[in-house]
Image (cartoon, rainbow, N blue to C red; front, side):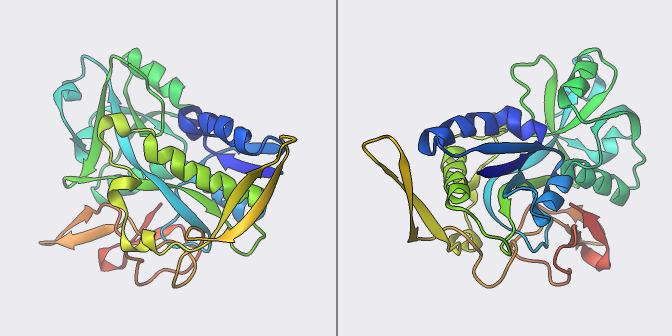
Length: 301
């Protein structure tokens, strides 16, 4: 059995198609799906309620995972809005306008809130919702600007989709396949991770917006993955047996957790949100859903 956790946006944008491919590889595996926000999915993984979570992890965590693709925070702007002509929007430029936000269990919402706090912006929240499409419907009715992750499937909408920045830096996270290394990871789960990586190498949500995926951002830390690879052996009777061999994909050399952080850096006395780096923060306790900021402050992930 495979117990999988994913956000509603991830299920709609790529997990559904990924599951169809996965069932071809392992048709006899029973699958159970938990839908929730990323923060709750991470807790579910820690407590063993799911084997895997497709989510963006905290900067320091005891969970292990494999990067799939970057997630940007986007603004969906009504057609007649004054910001409609912008190529990117700074968080300070959103202050005068009513905003449509996902609930705080979504990590992209937490990151957006932290960027607003650093910028001394008090956002005008018109609605908080668990459903991205409800927010988009209100944008179409010109009721406000929706703040959404790039995992949301927007299709060919007539409204403008614009990346949000802080001091000219993109606000972004990494979508990953996460698991708890303290618990047994079944071969069926390992096959899913491998297939998720291959699937998102070819396509992923946000690619049409010019967001570069893992094929363009592979770092030394990414090349340090070393796990077991699961090979599927097809038998004549169409049943499948799983053979486990050594390869380079699960686990992170040099200790648990991700060698990555998205935090704030200070230059010329101003704090700016930095893009994902491949260096772990120097000071953060494992499992804390924060990234270290310049000057000792923290930002929720």
